[in-house]
Image (tube, rainbow, N blue to C red; front, side, top):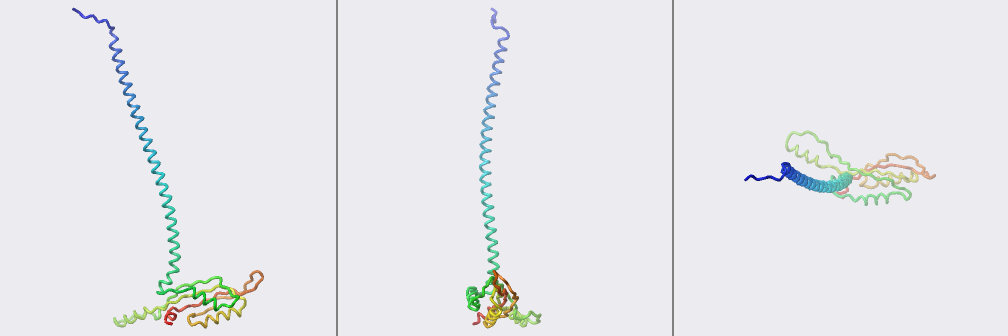
Length: 213
């Protein structure tokens, strides 16, 4: 007995095409979901990198501020080192306040200091000469080791008259620990109608003789 097919010939083709369309739709939906998830993860990673970059910028700014502060401290240390170099070389502390107090005691009443500078002045007590024997060389090294440590002071100030300035220089010369007192310059200066003498005096303080006392 023959089977009779009541469905038209195009119907199976339509069903097959519908299945293909449905499969393509599911594949497209899966691809879109995958792309959406990938975009979400990418945006999350970008946001995390932005936060990390902002943190790095903050750390960099903080490091630059600390570096600038360190440079300032190093510059200050360098300036202080130049001043402390004198005390390191002489091997004993100098009470500059006592020196200033002594200068104030020697100054006439109307004299004023505008600037006081000091620098280390080292001079060897004997010139180095070539020697032949080891004993003579050791003796020469011992002599060269005897270094006279001195501090050179420069005073810049004003005095009412030449008489007051001469009196101050005379008192400086009278102090046994102030040596090589020298007047660098002295000239007339006017300030608000007042005539005075502006001067600069240089002298040396021998620390060796000071320590021997």
